[in-house]
Image 1 (cartoon, one colour):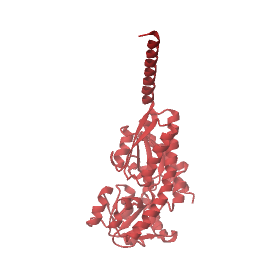
Image 2 (image 1 turned 180 degrees about the horizontal axis):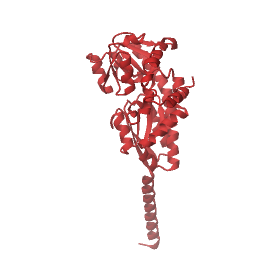
Image 3 (image 1 turned 90 degrees about the vertical axis):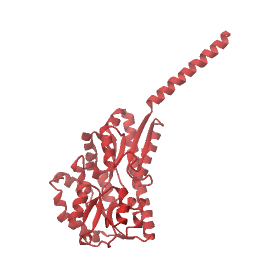
Image 4 (image 1 turned 90 degrees about the horizontal axis):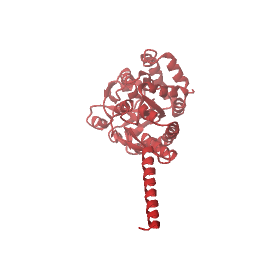
Length: 336
């Protein structure tokens, strides 16, 4: 081997070593985040998660990758929230109703007829009061990132169009395993039945329940409109979902990376609001065409329900579960 050939070979080897070192370094610097949620991909929640992954990849120059697991692939909402708490799952989107199993202050979102429209909902979600609630998750070893809008939870039933609270008496209504929902239905004279979302179709079909409480998106994507007849859109429960990260994962990120996560979560929140509005409109029209009776309520028509809740239901939660000061702050955050 000539001296010239030896130099060329050595140079090539040095370049290969340098490329290997850079490759290993880049691999070491890359971060993969496992992110689960319970609903389908083509929902406001799913679109929010996808937007989060997109923005985070963009901000990090591809160094931060998000693996998304929709449709409860990695557990129920409560199991995913527990996973974030224990550090076995990096991120999730889960209901405030299931968070109330960890801290009863989240039951504030299970109380019906408090938020009357989306304008109030977004003022509340963007308020200092909401941020305080998100920050309180730190004591559970969870980093609260954003409150996501999945749509109001409404009542679907097979018996009758709902005009006044007495119309619900005697009905078996499926609901989440959450104190606010159970108390609401009992106070209205209905019989609450807890079950997983995946079981609702069969329960409605075989008459185990007369109705269910779900967001419009769930009613559509689970085809509940095929067997449910009367949908009451009166903005019953505003029970949002929370985008959260394991504190273990959060603390493993440097300050710049944490900043990217916050920016991506904010983008996801705003995107979710935009797509929810259009999706809900489309879903409602499709369900009407399929034969469902969809009743929307004016503020005056809704008032008989909110007055009933204020008189008969709110005292069950305030101040025994929700401190009066927290309740007052929550009401003020609506901007009414």
